[in-house]
Amino acid sequence: MSRTVRTLVPLALAAMAGAAASCNAPPKREPAPFAAALPSPAEPIPCDYPGIHNAVAYHDGFLSGSVPEGDAGFDTLKAMGVRTIISVDGAEPEVAKAAARGMKYIHLPIGYNGFDEQRRLELTRATRDAMRDGPVYIHCHHGKHRSAGAAAAVVASLGWSTPDEGVARMKVSGTAPRYKGLFACAAGATVLAASAIDAAPAVYPSVSRPAGLRKAMVEMDHALEHLKLIENAGWSPPADHPDLVPAAEAGRLADLHRLMADGKHRGRRDNDFIKLMAEGHALAQTLEDMLAAGESDGAKLSRQFKFIAASCNECHAAYRD
Image (cartoon, rainbow, N blue to C red):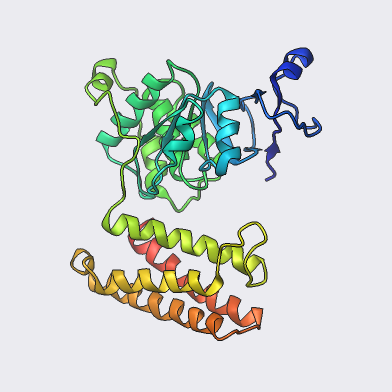
């Protein structure tokens, strides 16, 4: 399914034209101020903006989407009038970039397998209170799975939509069917009484620093994404990411697997998990060795990368999904 691609236009032109944004507007050079139209809860497909992808409205002024990419992403959110960003991703958010644009971050990470009642209360209160200041943007990494599940549960908890409507919006976001825990959180969400919401903390951290297993998994995901970019660039540093060194990214992935297999997390998982980490290390180490040796056969490199991806999917199915 294709996405709606939104562009930004200067605020003065938007007022003259009677619209905040136009999909067909020519690019403008004026740096500021900008205005951007918020997607509607009736949009049947996700919207893309500069630095913001997979944006889907779950309620008027309450959006789910991808992590803001660089200055462009934060500029887009500011142009939308967003005042609060809620991250449910495990990675540390870019608080300084948000603050520089008058936005605050709330960091409440969740897993791909869903979240507990306490986290639902926290997400619901954080959203309800923040909406008093203006639009709220909730994101994970890609904006398809975790942020969609959280958004659907929140709108149902606040009585803004039914659980079925929230699940339908998750499908617009592209939430994978295999993430049954996220769908269950949305489908099972009931309207919370104001007193129950008020019982949750009123203040939340701008950064919940990932530690241990979760941090390692976040870093693994980033290394895999970097390797995918490198593969798409013909196993060379991508033009838009010249800092990515193929052998170094493969080595980072190998090191993370090794640490998970041999380090302090060994006692936290069963022997099958340790075995998967050891196998992942061997596969990633082989890819690093191939790249370091100057292997130029892209098909061979991609085949090895597929072995790594398959190993990661096996681990996700058993321990994350």
